[in-house]
Image 1 (cartoon, one colour):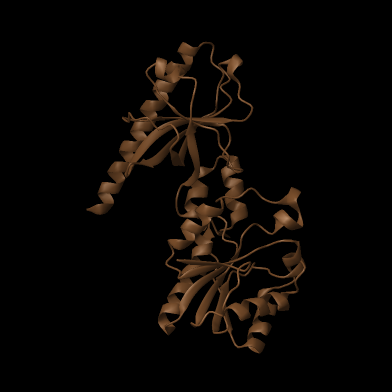
Image 2 (cartoon, rainbow, N blue to C red):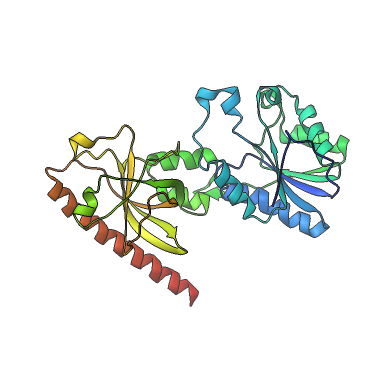
Length: 320
């Protein structure tokens, strides 16, 4: 997948292009309606499918205090978009100058990059230009003048309502991980680096990989079934996201994620791992003693193992 940035000196792209336009935070099922439709149409007419997006959420510039926490950080968003088989992505640098451009100027700039633009495909809620004045209706008028068509993707629905990044963020914040996963089309995950821990788990036969999450969007504190792909295989684990309340002298400045991976022994310090949140097991609790805590953790491990077995059995059943 080619990546071009509007901050670079760009020669006009020589090929016919279908553009999928949007910010695509989460690259959820609704976004895939936009992206998949653009790829399909481009293939039908012998054109290339490209994504038109911004390098940051516009509200980071327009209203920094009101900017939403991102479902997917920048690099993860690019990786997920690449998985949709688009040919390239055009990243517009969104800054104060870009925020003041009229909708017509914005589209003129894009037409300058892609002079053989055939179609722009977007969702019904996509907005562009100063004060978000550019609507799909205005885009259709501009397309008629500039020689390209418009395609508005149908909403992907979940429980009768359109799938949106806003709904998914709320589900994650509420701990409704099943809802979030079904709208995303995959489990919600964060990518973090393993750091040194206090070795308390190891001393009790329950070693953990420790993370200091940098993600701005996290589920509520509590205990979860998680999974990570390590050395090419999926490894399930039980994770505690929280404040270590049983150890009053070890309260962190921010929530810590501690993961005990099942049947896995390897030094993970310094590794970058994607941790997928699969199921919430319980709230984080203050126990009367460390022994009581580790007794509960062993129960959590048992529940996690049962979940892993059920998922493996379901996968094998679908493959028959």
